[in-house]
Amino acid sequence: QQPVQSPQAVILREGEDAVINCSSSKALYSVHWYRQKHGEAPVFLMILLKGGEQKGHDKISASFNEKKQQSSLYLTASQLSYSGTYFCGTGRLAGNMLTFGGGTRLMVKP
Amino acid sequence: EAGVAQSPRYKIIEKRQSVAFWCNPISGHATLYWYQQILGQGPKLLIQFQNNGVVDDSQLPKDRFSAERLKGVDSTLKIQPAKLEDSAVYLCASSSRLLGPTQYFGPGTRLTVL
Image (cartoon, rainbow over all chains, first blue to last red; front, side, top):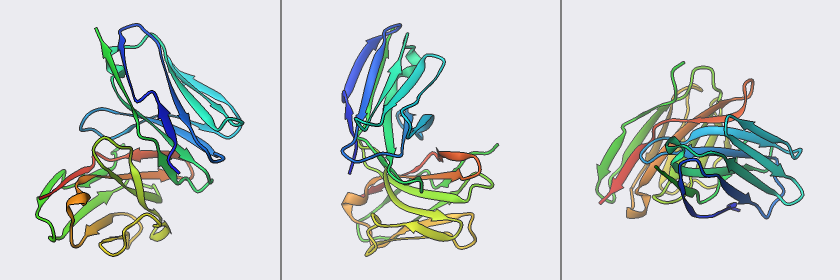
C-alpha cells in the first residue's frame, strides 16, 4: 500500500524551513528519501531503518517514528537548489522492495 | 564511478507497437530494479532482479511486459503491444547488498504512446 505524503506542495522563500511527512498504514522496515528535479532521475538523500533513528547532513535531516509508522524530512534554511519533488519510499521487508509515495512538490523562491 | 546507464532516453511509438528499454547498472551491483513513473506520481516498482533471478514481479503486467537479465548485468524491459496508458518514464535502479540498501537511479526512458 502506497505511503501518504503531506503536504502535496509547498512554496518557500529562501532561508525558510519546511517539514515533509510520510505515513504508512503498514509496519515499516525502512524509509528512503529522494529528491527529483524535473526531467531528472531521483537522487538519494538518506535512509532510515527500523529503530526510530534520526539522520541528517548539512541542513537536511529526517526522523522515523516506528510506533506511528511515520517519517518526517526536515529542510532548514532552504536554498534555491532544494526545489524539486521529494519522494519517500517505504520498505516493509529487508529485501529492499520499495513503495513510493505520491511526492511533495517544493518550490523555493528568492 | 559511472552511474546507472539507460537507453534510449526518449521513445515515441504508436499503440500496439513494441518497444524495448536497456539498462546497465553500476558495476558490481547485483540488484536491479525497473520502475514505472507516470507523470505526477511516484515511481512504481515493476520488477526486481537479484543477479539474473527475479525477486519480485508482482506488479509487472505480464500479458504485455517482460524483462530479462540473462548474464546478471545488463537488463532489458520490453512492452508488446503498447497501450496509451503505458506512457511514462521507465526508471532503472541498482543497489549492492555489500554497500547497503540505497538504490541509485538512472536517467530514465521517457515513453510516449500515441
